Length: 389
Image: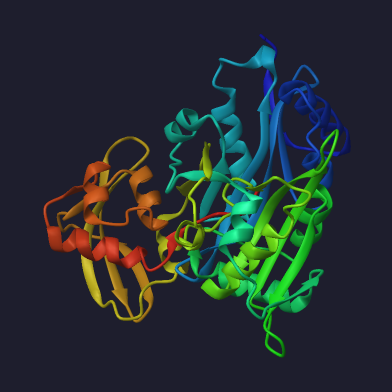
């Protein structure tokens, strides 16, 4: 442990070392370390010529307020078991972010079960994440396909639909051209398109199956994109038609959008919801993150706020909205609402759905009107991240 620790971008040899380290640290091979090699950045920590920590980083856009925002998405990070307990994960996070920030990232997203460590570094969860399971027979008896046609395969039209629908939430990845193939290949997905005869595609469903040892299969939904309630109902009915082979339909964590079609359509509510570790957001560059995000077009006002920095001190800012745009500039005016940097991330993602939830979460305010304005400014769309990395 007394040998010097260095950080470096991975060359071919370090990639291979990290792949072996991740297998040892996770207890199983991590396929994305190979699958994402062409697209991801890998930073590693090296001690005595051995890779002892590292992690992948993807520079992609995420939609917030209907606009793409450059994001550093961190995944598949680990520290060698013999190196744990020395805060190496925190130093590694800084090194992983550095090249992505240099390339334009203004926010960062991470999905981790170590939420306490992520919070100490400024990330926070805007919303809970659930995986759902429902009996296939219950779907069959509760939903109908109406006059929708179902076709197999992913098309350019279906990808365009997914992008359009993703803009209507805070958090989904603006999927690069390589994303669907990587996603389909790594999970062995089958995709279906839904449309009324003679009309454009309005639904996209991707799922995978696993054979049971004796009979039937497990069916897991990875993508569920519907342009409206009739399409969503038709997609649920289609899943119900698998009842002769699959007893239960599972929606992978975060795959089912947070709207009530399933809840309101079931004749008998016998679903199971399992909580998973959430996706967490961090603001890397406040002024640029505010500038790039989409904002309500009918909001024209200015709100003085204060934001806690990494040292615990607060800086004063004026947040100005006008015609679907916003900017934040330094000011000497005392803030009417005070955010910690983690609270700022939740607000940015639309995680405070009311002034009540903001107050209970600890957001301090001296003006109910100012807090109401801020909550309204980010809640046009709900937080949802169905993408995994």
